[in-house]
Figure 1 (cartoon, rainbow, N blue to C red):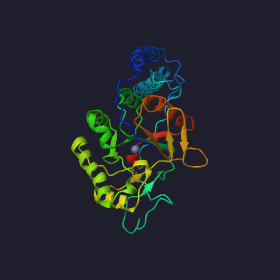
Figure 2 (cartoon, helix red, strand yellow):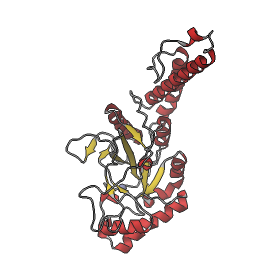
Figure 3 (cartoon, rainbow, N blue to C red):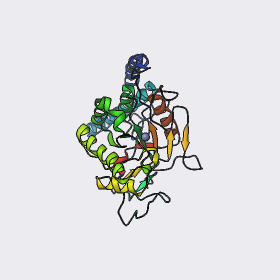
Figure 4 (cartoon, protein in one colour):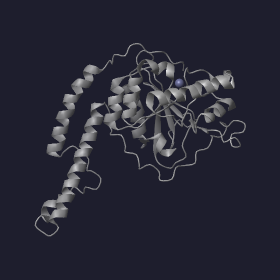
Length: 315
Ligand SMILES: [Zn+2]
């Protein structure tokens, strides 16, 4: 997909979001006070045992337990309200704790280059080896800079990784600094988004390593993760990337758009550890906003029993 510079940065749904905040406050109030409508929180037995125990020697621990259960119910109600606010019927699932031992990531079969192992080149892969029922969201390029997307992902606590191409982000580094400050990892997607295999080693190196310099200057960190534009690369790409500190070159196993999914594999299913691609694009480029894409993404992911985890926690 050819990235297009996005000029219109006005969010189309600003009014809807402001209206939604009022609704959200009401829902929180209702759920928090009445204690109805929310599913039992994990660990809460819902029997109301705490008052019975009030008089005994267990009183203090029982009260603490009841308070804990109440906090869990409130948190669950809040997450349900936030999900509804963003147009989701189902609350996104919470991912497991990051793996204590990181999986060993190798090049996907058929995605290796000559000398892959001998030269210790960064592996190109589309799925992280894990049995956790998680997928990873990656967002590419950087043309659309939708503030609603930042709010939505923070509200829902959905982790993602952004692969930035300098010519699309240079007009507003501040948007991506705010993203970084919300805990998002920013990674390398070249200076100008070229078809790398057509370039000499020297020019590929300039595209990749030049972007490392921009990332360090603008965002304070040189990424260890790089994605070649269009998913196209050759041995020079991976050698150049390695020379400036890149250790991983993830592609994707699924791509999500506002109105459909595309699958790399015939089974058209999500798999544990799959990396999902989407783009910083808006109505100027496709049939929807970034929140529309996130809704499309989360509905499928949640319905199939997956949580969204942070890619870097597994690398
Ligand atoms: Zn791209």
